[in-house]
Amino acid sequence: MSAPRATTDQRIGVLIDADNTSSAHAGAILEECARFGQPTVKRAYGDWTTQHLVGWKSALLTHAIQPVQQFANTRGKNSTDSALIIDAMDLLYAGNLERFALVSSDSDFTRLATRLREEGRYVVGIGRRTTPEALVAACDEFKFIEVITGEQEAGDSEDPEAPQLPDLPRIFQSAIDGTSDDDGWSHLSAVGSHIQKRHASFDPRNYGFAKLVALARAQDYLDVEQTGNVTRVRRRPGRKGAAKR
Image 1 (tube, helix red, strand yellow):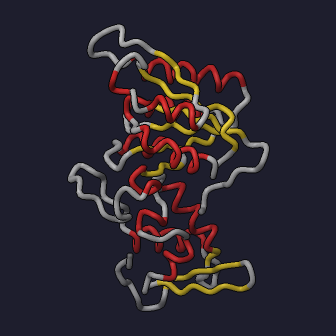
Image 2 (tube, rainbow, N blue to C red):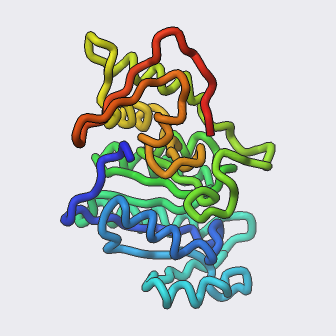
């Protein structure tokens, strides 16, 4: 939606924390990553000698994902995290990737996401709704596995530990105020970009809509007009209605 979409020469490295991610979602995760660039590096990290990761073996072959073996050398220490972080930095300094996808719900990757962005790389995070806010905010965009897989109804989270979705009227109105012309109208693309920069996990699918324009049209406090390929939006005078899903 509002994110800068990939051109054909933009390459993305997909680094998967297999210890923290179900193999059943491998296909959906790679399909989501392909929206942001050409996946030229696809690696999954874990101790492949354990039964815990046996389900990943067929997924690795099906999706041409390279397994990276990391033995759990010390009890209580996550060696997989260290291996992924080291590889990410090697790939960064090799200079062959414009974007990174970090697939994990583990907050240990927060600093990695921040470091990659400091070097000008676009970072997409993919994890569960229970992912700590620190990791979500450290990414340019963060996509919830429950949404991209359809595993859970969009906009609905039964887990009490899951972060609440941002208040839709507030973020829409703030974005419009920050991007509107003198007449009060804003380009919808500018509104989407404004929201994404401030809320990394924002995605129309979180609220049950495939596209930003459909989400905007469903809000009774917004006016939406389209002229050719240009869609504009403004706050409807006198309306402060709640978000519709």
